[in-house]
Image (tube, rainbow, N blue to C red; front, side):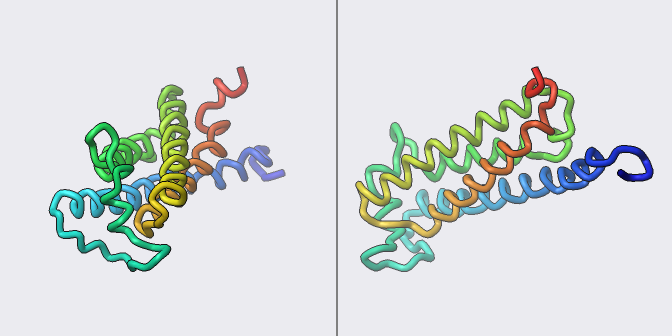
Length: 162
């Protein structure tokens, strides 16, 4: 037990202190990759920095029918998604007493992870090619998902205890 009497609670607070910073960093990484992919989509350069072979082919993935959702490029949807995640993952909002922020953050990463699962399916079974930039987004989204889900008891304690 610590001299202040907090014991495990003090240790947990120290562990939790890095979570908002990491969540913001991961959101910014996702934002950066999505911005790059969106710019590439709209400039039409088809010059993605990605190898092209029988397994990896970013151009094949990003120009496939699955790269659009209702006429909107998936890259642009990712940019909007990560812009919103940057906002809800600001450290000040992690410390907010507004519990709906924690639940919104959770809903966003759960929805994002669901879409990532579809996109991985599309790459592997429909397009039959993998985009390394997309894989970066998939890994980033998964890491955010794990971080947010594992942080929920600390970020919305009253709702979890209820």
